[in-house]
Length: 365
Image 1 (spheres, rainbow, N blue to C red):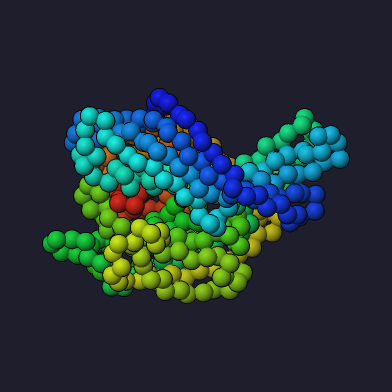
Image 2 (cartoon, rainbow, N blue to C red):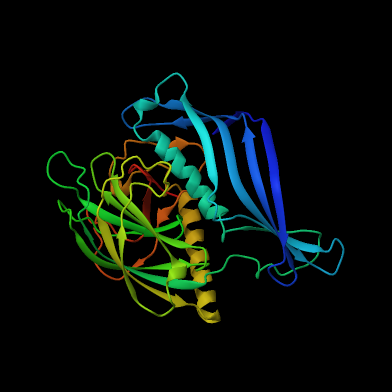
């Protein structure tokens, strides 16, 4: 990604200070950032020549949470935690313009970039995710400030009913993607030619903050070129009682962003079973080490070129979108553990594969 010019205009509209925990001061800041950046994304597609895409008029509206860890020594602050609050959801606006070409030459490019930007923001900065910065040169243990696994969510994707048919001939070939963090996604096998599929596949996902996090369930239609999203739903983890199984029927929506919902027709539903387990200290340490190991392995694969660009195709299928030379390399990948079903190229697996953007293109980490 080439940064040609960036003019920054930012504004803090209000600040709220509170003490939520002993030894800490919490500051919530209403933040507006607006500028006139000229960011050129080099987009390569399988069927057309490389097209430069210009991103302009970037604006960010969000609430920043800053936590100051107090200390007895001057400067009296040993560390700062920075995060974006989950509610209200961070809003990112921008416009896209093809340089010397047309955006219509690459179907889904706008949605792909929108999903990539939001995935990065969500997984890196949106609460409970945070950046911890030691300051003042004071030796301090910041481990208590860092994000830690809090519990394990066992998810069984049971079935779906009355899915929307996206095919001109025949019926959709649905599969389900579930995740808490966009960085760690898992997917079911594909059920061919069926609008009432049954999967009965079970996965384990790690949660860091049951009070603020939610499970996202997306149903896709596998297709040549681009997989299409049939519907999406979200379930807040706070509604689960630890160690208490719960079966839920989720009504599928075209989008979680109500401002973007144009098609309000019934998209069917998805039945899932959930069980939340709260970690003890030993389990928490094991989960933390396992997560670090997975991320380190993924980093090595990326450096070795085994994991490709942000728009590699899912399960080897052509996505219609090639490499995005934007440097946005933290888009999610499917990662998790499955206990039922089997792995195949056709059916998919829950080992690391590429994640999907809103209109079905794939993008690995």
